[in-house]
Length: 253
Ligand code: A2H
Image 1: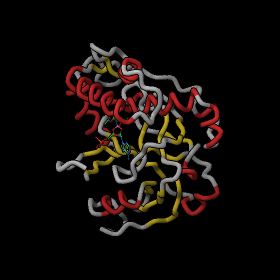
Image 2: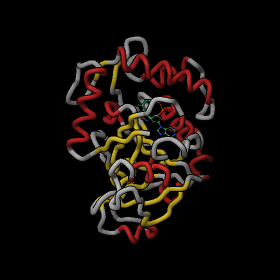
Image 3: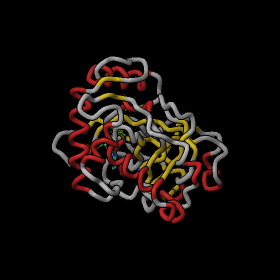
Image 4: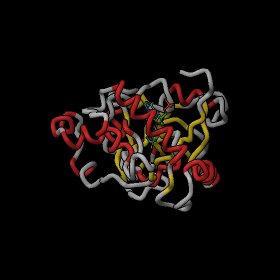
């Protein structure tokens, strides 16, 4: 963890009914996987959510209506940032693991794909953000490689009970142009660095550094309300709008 606080946008990815049996006590509530992102301007290109199969999650009461599925650690932090029905005290309605979340259908803000699915990612850290990550394979090297692993390795899909229809229809959607890397920056950089899987940590760190920096300083929006505008200008505007409409909340740690 850095010394500086990190300001995340938590994207409220709504779990669509019918709920699985484990979610029986959540019936009638609005239930979200709350994904921590630093790139709210890329949300148009979401293709899925990522969860850690062995991760421990809970369904926490944020207010009278909303329930967030996140790690207990994130729920405690949120409770101190005014996001808990009982101030400073998280209330867990159901304990869950990542396995309980794989395959949930989700409706996520700004996403061109109307329904996306929760899928397994093995490199999620449980001491960062909410333990839930939204996936934008056009612009995030980690997301690109994790999706690549699932698509290329049927045995990996079988191991985690991932159905073909949760991944195969989801293509990379160009969201941002970076002059040096084109319209699918994550794919370009992962290919250039010859990254083979989501487990190549050091190469992926380099890929992230390259795309993150250039995306912010030189990227131009290809889609959405701010099409043609610089990422630097669009990012805060998109973030504010998501928060005003109640589709996201701010979270820092
Ligand atoms: B970002 P930082 Cl398009 N474990 O969102 C692993 N990764 C996590 C995480 C966790 N517990 N929580 C959040 N993240 C990811 C979008 C995105 C992101 C794009 C491009 C780059 C990028 C879509 N995924 O991050 O260590 C989330 O992925 C590159 C760094 O706090 C979040 O933003 O700097 C980012 O990592 C936060 O990482």
